[in-house]
Amino acid sequence: MSRQCEGLTQEMEALKMMICCQREKHRSLEEKNATLTRCLDSIKTQICQLKSANGCLERHRDELSLCNQSLKTKIKELDKTLTKLRSSVECLKQRLNSLSLGS
Image 1 (cartoon, rainbow, N blue to C red):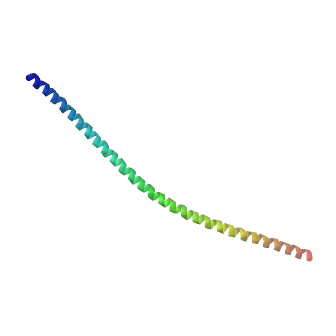
Image 2 (cartoon, one colour):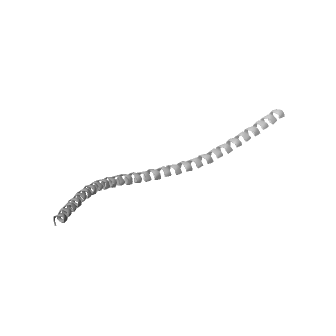
Image 3 (cartoon, rainbow, N blue to C red):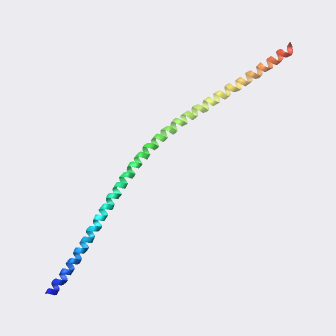
């Protein structure tokens, strides 16, 4: 009977050790889970910030696109005006030449 008790005692000790190891593994996994949860929360926050920044950049891009279109239109208008001015200057030169030749 004492051998049976001794065997049961050893088995109990082995089970206690296994339980202790399992508790340690469980605690370690809980710590890792907490760390990963904090990382995930941080990533979610960064994603929100990036989405917000992206929205701002898209608005600025759209504003710049409108400004760019407006500038292109103004450049075309200025080009037409410059062409007219050159033509007028050419006409004035010809009149001046003809007046100079006529005197």
